[in-house]
Length: 473
Ligand code: ARG
Image (cartoon, rainbow, N blue to C red; front, side, top):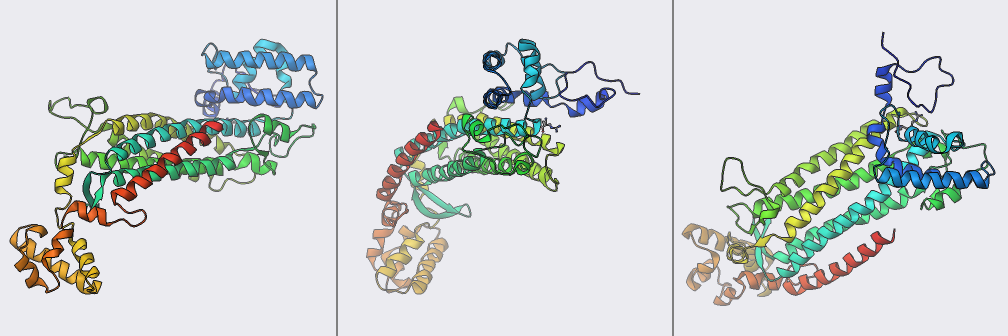
């Protein structure tokens, strides 16, 4: 025989002869993780009290008493002066109990016209829209750190890679700025998401709406939503907007992971392109010489976790029939985790990037190595009127000759060049420098420093725009 849990506060029970068994209560309970929704639950309760009073269900005095009590309760919860009871089933139960402790039975009138189904969906939207703003601000800080480093390193020529093999030299500023663009798209996605997250489920009740003449439009507006959701069943049953948030977050995590991976490579002894600041690295417990890129590695590791949170929720949602199902209680922990992880990793990434010291000399020296100027020879030949197909062959023959002699392209003599092809006059040397190569790629979005400077100016404007967007909400 399992015992019955001790005298919990429950928002249901009238039709039950006895309370739930302890394991049932333990399984059901979510207050230990969902109490963080309490400030949002109180905000929506305040809005709901307003609607109940306008519908004549609460009089002015009752409304005033409740509003004051809710304001004080929120302040006490935020300051940690009051909290959940381990016996509370969930955040809604806890908030109702705390309210009744302050205003007596009047607190029990607030539930009219509302169910935990529309309540939890509303709290969760309020929470996530708020946290999205915190995440966006942290992303903008990281973008700024990347942009500052890009500005300082426009004229540093670095090896550009494809397949992790030397491909063509690029401006380091160009390389760093690419991450600012990727993060900008993450914020764009978050803005798009916010349009859909800004619809209010409150008023949907359990699933079918309410017989009390409540005003879902007014309550939506009061809570900063744009409109109420138009179908009460849809309002309480779908979590596509949660999955969408988790995708945006996972994509952001993947971008952070790519940045992390590059920092890990660049700070390795083999690359030797950059040095981590002491404050943004860790040592080894056994090897005294070690300075490890743990921020970058944790960023790379967290991406897996964020992807897992997305796929886990999608699996939870798949096949849920009709309206609310209790499976939906499983939607919160992965989201709380994703939000927490991002808010941990983003400031650390910003600090690491802002303090990274690049070794410009080493990068510049290795930029043209590995025959990275072979394309420049081919394009020089094209400018001399040679068809590209033939130019590619000739440049390839230059690489083969240099490789055979164990030298770089610019070490080939005039004689060796002319033996490879009559088209290869001594003037070909004009393109055999990394700087010349980079300067020549002046197409739109290309790596020529003049173009990169324009790009960075545009990005500075974009960051200003992002700051306006995310502080306005
Ligand atoms: N804790 C629940 C959740 O997160 C609240 C809604 C409960 N609704 C219900 N019908 N039991 O989904």
